[in-house]
Image (cartoon, rainbow, N blue to C red; front, side):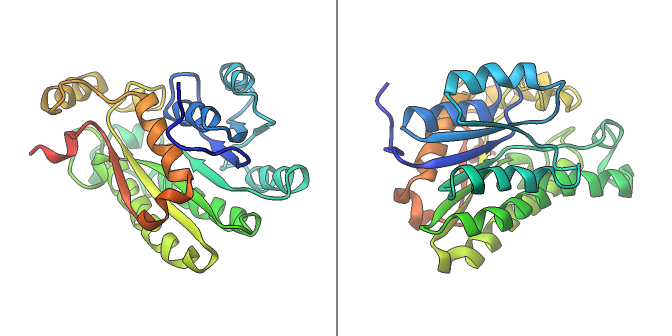
Length: 257
């Protein structure tokens, strides 16, 4: 397949691959097809057997553990990149988490602890990554995160992740403004509903998939490959004028009332 953009000579970090069917894996594949060299993280040893084959297929130069809840692990990832590469051209943040009991509760019934955990892992971790990555992006760069339509509209059973993703999208706008003088762009990819391991934690997600499919103008859900091609474009300098944008990748589902 002919790549949509040329990322030859670029080096990128992909955080959030759970398995070969995850959105992060689709993006990583597109980055690699466009010629980029990749560093990939895995959550823990339990997740490693699912991520390692993906990393090997991608020819990832680095495969590193990264649980942002564990002090020092995120910093260690960037220390490895600084030592082995000395620079970074783009990063993809595709992680989200909320305690199951809070995710399945009404938003007004979620606990303060659960909300704080969801916000820290799903939103603030992107700001932490930006702070660590920026010094390595000496020639400019691109920072991307993954959001969802539930940030903008109420989606049944999405619950506390709606406010959390809304905060993530707002953070992207402020990040883009803060980092603009350093020629670093920031984007949120508002991905359409996809049956991934992470999404399966949302209550009655299969029903959400059916509703989204029914209201999508094309009649079919977006694929991880389609989202990946958009991410590859956003990793390139061609997307620079769009910095700060929330880019919808949902086959038009967000346009239909």
